[in-house]
Amino acid sequence: MVSDGAGSDWPEVDVAPKRLARMGDSMATEMDVWQSAWMIAEEYGSEGVDFAAQMAHSFEVDGKVDAQKVWLSIMHKVETLTCESARAH
Image 1 (cartoon, rainbow, N blue to C red):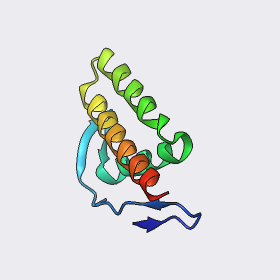
Image 2: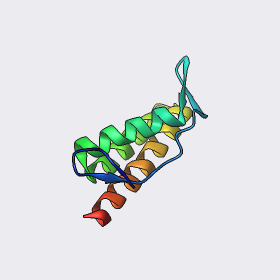
Image 3: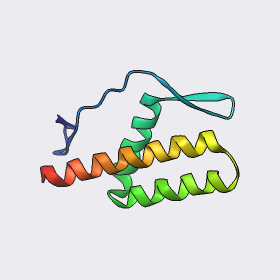
């Protein structure tokens, strides 16, 4: 577990910059995805999972499969972060 200095503990994760999926003209790295998941988890808590799922669905409807995959990954990471945080308290 890693403390954020504000009393919250989060699981340690591998954030090595791996290419995850193309979003527009740029590539989302694993670090980008974890950073997004962390921000969503901090802002929305466990409701962030539903937020990320809605984002993934919106990209699926638009046929943007790579962006959908990124948001599904974010969704799973938010779920991991919020579940770990709930167990720690």
